[in-house]
Image 1 (cartoon, rainbow, N blue to C red):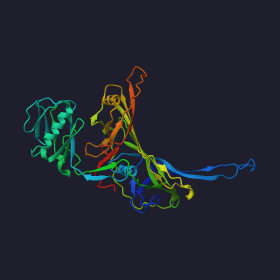
Image 2 (tube, one colour):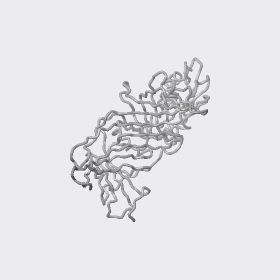
Image 3 (cartoon, rainbow, N blue to C red):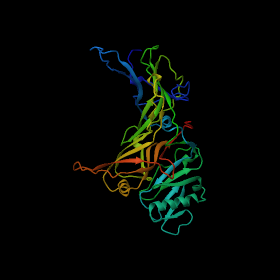
Length: 427
């Protein structure tokens, strides 16, 4: 052992509090982090008195400030605890069947096909009967007709699933909420169309929906343990009353998917013994930037080079008098949603929506195509500005859309966060 602590060996445990600012006796999970910058700071205040001479009098203690960032992996399981910290418990957690999709880039040509677990379904110019669908006026109309025909079919293989349209995708979900649908096959002969995989995936996983604007937000206690320090010393830091203020998620071309959570806490105590008992240690299964998802009105957008999503609870700190310089809590303010999308300047859907002043919906997140796990933020109403198209040289021209999210009146909220994994509950 020794007298110097390192980040390489630090151990972080966390649990949700039943009473704000009080460390729970159980329910701790081991947390993974790239950076853990939240820490207590208490400054000294100097306020000179007249006539006290040139030598400074003793300083006074200022208020306690427990703030900082947790930079954490977006993984399949543990990240749900940070989603609960930011947005409250899930509105629903539902076990689901296997899922997949067929994505089209253009209208199908007559007599091309899709195949659903061996059943061939054909696109026709007109006069469709049986396992056939007529090509309609545009791609979305054709997929809508296909969805209607498939959901109304009595074919023994087709009837096993439910079909919907998401932008240019035919989404296929098996109706049995277990792994039996993981062998259900997808294929197509339509030029330019792709399948999510040769079979559906993710049967038996759970879909957790976290929603915007929860009236109450939970708090957590975090224990930071420095095993490098000698036993019996103050090698535990207990941070209590921690609330999630801002969530930042960046999309880039490669690397690990990470999130930054700005945390506001009430107090930090040093201790010689652990409060976390024997914490639960879920397997950390990382999601990757390589499998990033960004769909605008359900469709992929060409020439997008990066994204940065910032959602803030706009916490209003309760600066109570006395109580040792601690805050009395924090009240959630108006939710702020900002999405920065960087793209090459060209004729695409983003530019068209900005020009038309038409709000769009956006899916933003990461998925694992091998097992069906995913974390996706669904922004129900995003307003795009007209960006500056500066020409800095002879190369490509990039523009940045600093978009703002808002509540969609018909849906009743600004966003949902969908986390799909093998964990049954985050209650």
